[in-house]
Structure formats: C-alpha cells, structure tokens
Image (cartoon, rainbow, N blue to C red; front, side, top):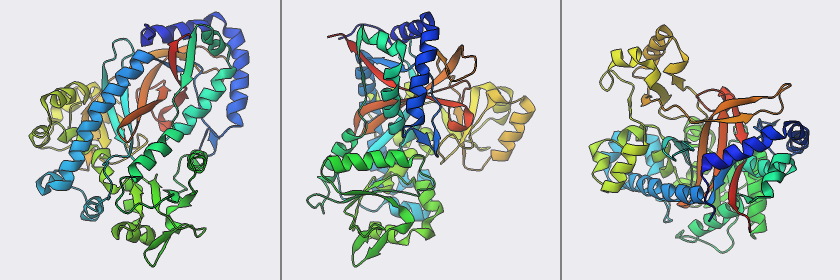
Length: 448
C-alpha cells in the first residue's frame, strides 16, 4: 500500500501545478470546455470548480471507511431507539404528522439506506468534526463523476499519473447494487422491481444526476423513471408513474422537509406509503438523523445509555458541542461576548440555509441575530474552523493560489463507505450560497 500522507500528496500535486503554471492554464481550457458541455450542472448552470483535486491515499480511504462504520452504527441505533421507545421520540419534538410517517414500517432491514455525512477533516493528522448528516437528499455524485472525467485533460493530472495510479470513486452503479440489496430484504418484494426516482423536480438540484441514476438502473436490468412526486397516481392498491408505469420501489430524493411543506399536494404518494403498497427507499425514519437536534441529543444521557463506551468516546471526539438556542440551554452573555466560538443553524434545513457564524458579524450584529432566532427552532453549536489548503480557481482572469476552507461529504450506501464529495470555499461556511467550489475526489494508489 502507498505510504504517503494526505497533505504530502496534495502538496505534491499543488507543486506540479505551480511548476508548470502556464501549461496548466492552457489545459484548464480543455477541462472547462468539457464541463461546460457536460451534465455537471446545478439548476442549469455549470458547476464552479477548483483546479487541484482532493487526493486520498489508500490508507486514508481505509481510515474513512472505518470512521463511517462507527458513525453508521450510532445513527442506526438512534433510529431504532426512536422507532421503539415513545419517551425517546418525545425528545425530538417532531410534528405529529411527521411522527406518524416515520413510524410506518418500512418492511426491509436497513434503517438508513443512503447518507452523506459531511466532515471537517484536518489533512495533516486526520482529526475531524462532523458538520451535518444528510440522508435521502444526498446529492452531487454526478459532479464528482464529471470532474473526474474532465481532470484527465489537465497537465498536472497527467504528470501525477506517471508516478501514481489515480482512480475515482464509483457512485452510481454501486448505489443501484446496494438499493437492490436493500430491496431483497423487502417483505413484499417482486422479481425485477420497477423503480421511480422521485423528487419535487423544481427543487431537484440536478435533473442530470437523476438521469445518470436512471441509466444505472436500466444498465442493471431494471425499468426506471424520473418522476415528479406530485404527479404520481394511486389506484386499486398500485402506485403509478405519470407515464403509467406501475411502481414497485421508490428511490426517494425528495427531502422530508419539502414533503411536509407540500403534504397536501402529494396525496397519492402519501396514501401508497401509508398503505405499504410501495417500497420506499429511504423511508421517513431517516429524518431522525437528518434533523440537527440530533447533535444535541447525542450528548444527552438518554442517548448515551444505549451506546457502547467506544461510541460515547467517538461522539465526544467528533461531534461539536450543540444545544438548543434557548434561554434555558444557553448562557446568553457568553454567546454574545465570545461570538467567534459559535454558529447557529435551523433544526431542519439543507444547503447551509439560515446558518450564521459569529465570526462573520460584529458584536452588535451578532447580538441582534441571536435575539431574532432565540426560541425559534435553532441550534447553537461550537464553531469549528475548517482546514485550509492551497488551490487555484483557474477560470479567473488572473488566477493565483489562495487558501480555501475544506468540507468533505462521505457517501454511505447501506452502511458502506463508497466515496467522497469534496467542496472548498474562500469563506468559513461552505455552500452554494457562500462561494462554494467543487473539486474532484481522487484515490491515489502505488504505481503498478
């Protein structure tokens, strides 16, 4: 196995770019042209990307695999505790309509079919903190796929290939395989199930990504369609797609918060789920781990009691301290006086919407933000400064190396680590709204 650290290999790639900068500027044009004509789109626009990929030596991939095994075990236990103990359910405070949906028996074994757990990873010592847990809405697999194709046009990548075997994470066929492994445990399974990939399509960040998943299902021998969730029809115990295809299994991309917001618009989908006439992957029980109140509950005695000592230590080491933003749970003077220590987040959101970090505001502004969101379903969390690495946005008129904050999303399919989504930003909050740039995630192996 290749014996090289993550920082060392990424620094080496950076030096290749720096030493041959003009050549890399030229080959970036080929990369940009490819991406501009590719399926790497976000709401119809070509994704923003940085030139230097994020390189993962084999040993780091193994390390991340082990970390995923641990957090998945914890999240699975939390969901099962929620489903079986009313007193634990009460701690989450979910709307009764949502709780009712969560408690519908999914009729298959796994509790969390798909997830992307986002971490702030220190590339020097591999210490890290979790940022958030995404479930059914986990996305951007297609961005990484296209970036890994486009990067092969670049000079630095080609030079690195002379010394190392470079590979990408496969995120589409591997999901179809795990989806069908999950479906094989479904109590009402049929041979060759027909699959619907379902979302509120105006909210779906990438219809191109949905199409890639559809093609992977078809390649594996399954009929599959991308469907607008509002247009599903239920009749005589069967759910149908808008085209009339009977649906046996759903790959749910519609996030639970959107479903609850538009509940009255999707009666056929909801009825089919309530009556257990369709296999819903994932079921609504995944919302238990997506809601950010979980970060608070992981520290509470009621959760700690059903975890092992190793799992409790893992939480202490990797979960940032979190409480409800309330007079009861918070020392308001301390929060305002030490604003750079804190960040506030809505209990249930995605894409860093409604997130405020004290480091970005004056004391007066921060005090006002805290007052506006106090007792309003917000969480107060210890702020973790993201690890920074050098990179370059080659598409600028005068590109130059800068320091960027890093956030890595670890894809987990049916409890198994499958890949990484790498994002970087010139700011401390990393999201599309906050100057987010993607980077290809590349596996580095010893040259054979």
